[in-house]
Length: 188
Image (tube, rainbow, N blue to C red; front, side, top):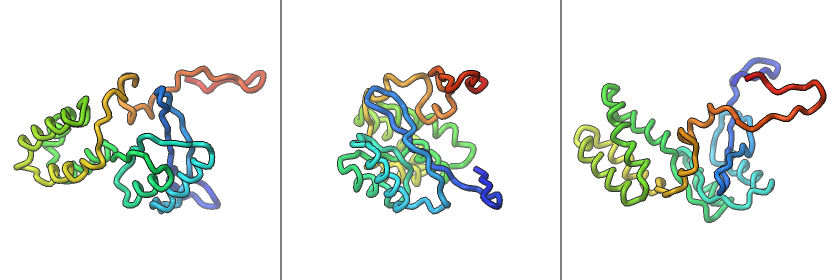
């Protein structure tokens, strides 16, 4: 995002979103960064969240930043850290030809939407049989990432249509209360 602070410069903003056990989503905070998105930065963010009252985190979904799982587990010891599927798929594209990307995504979808870990492993073996000879690096990437990927059955059943990643584009359905007489909500 472009920020004017004496001069115009690009500044990254990091959003931490939480989902309660009831499926309610909430933005826990937004932090302006300086471009040094390291484990130390995230440890400070997680410590701030814990100090503000986030007592426990069941599952943390993140990309493959080195040291990030350790920063999460330092703050909340029993948290299951899972690599983001979107990032894993994007990393897979580094090894695939453009002409095969759509077919690879179609073949991987049964893996990451499987109802159980065993079903996901079975679907992955089907993927490996289909694509492993042509793209062994993709198969290796998913096998080495398997420890960070955990199928969590029935967590997503109450999600609205579309997945969590694409909910960032969803318009909030809660009514906005006017804060003073004459104030109005943002236009739709």
